[in-house]
Image 1 (cartoon, rainbow, N blue to C red):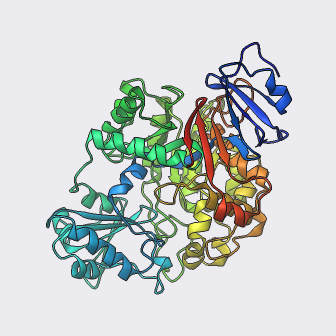
Image 2: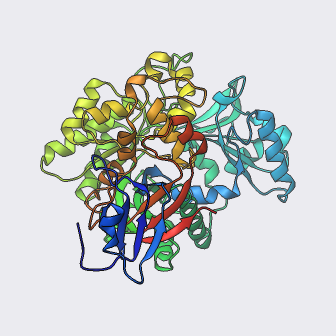
Length: 541
């Protein structure tokens, strides 16, 4: 395809994948913020004018910018202020306590020390930190250590005291306060975490804007040009909407954001957003209102995902049901009637069944509605659930990074029969359900290479193969990260492929993601350049 105008930017001399099913091309021309044409170097040469910027790819691999279909951008940016409790930084509980003590030494007594990222299944004994350990290590600071999944925290006695929690405090709705032999263990699951969060300092508007900018710039380093922020309002309500709007006006929004509004009872920002006309689809190409999120359960690794069958070694534990059927149905009906797509959290098969029933009601009431209701994570399904989702037009929105980071934990808490079938992305792809993928950052790193590796191999970080029948081809994996991500946001006509008239969001990688060995992708591939809206916004030094 040709154009009468000269290109502003041309990438040439590389291997350019413009989208699923398209042939590899050598060059691509960009005019303004959209793609003008692609083809051979000779095809695109006619579009080069005196002011065209030319980038020699030198054989590198370019493709549509990655779309992380589920992460928490503000929380990713705010993570810089927390102690890194991930397995890489703190592989043992002892190492975690040392890291917490180091932060405490730099923190005035009485002020909070917070951490994020531990996974007890990575410890040799598989045990969570305890209130006694935290008390001994940090007696003069309130401490909160959040599990990687974000659904479980462990706190010390000073934090419990600040939150007004004692042995007689009842479990809040949708939450669990850990107890053993009549004593508090320091574990807080799901909504019980709010008791502590509510007495911690809230970031200011300026700090939230800085987190948006920092988080977005972090994503650009991985070739991620679009994301979904998966619970806007969770940290400080409508302040987060204001922060996003101001960040966009001031040129401080590095990536495109599809903003999911928190819709949980007691913390919903849906109504004030609706009053301002901020319904699904409202906004700009950089900041657009997405759907409404309601939590229906917790996480599998934290043993709080709501399952039909109990967890291994815990015959009375089927996880946490956050809402009754009646309450969930009321909320889904209400928010859909207000004009919102639903993008609700559901991991366990019981939670997914509850969400499917809620969405089926909406479809039955209006079979022609155009909403692409999603189930975020959608970890554990069977053939019957998949067929019902397919019939109701429900999209699975999984994170294949979970397979790499947490696959072995799933086997431990669910057993091999259920654990191996976690997040069956190839099944969904074969059924035509257009599964997307992402990181759920800061649950996992937004680094896309472990996610891609998991899609190509179904291997965990330990090398365990989690059901090889769920392996995707390289092109299918890239489609999940691009076109399907765009489809999940209703924006497949403008992004996710590099075709004339579509947005010029491009990622350039050091290796060919279609032909490189999975181990090469995981260990030695880097993003060399990221283009958003036709502008080069990141170059690796």
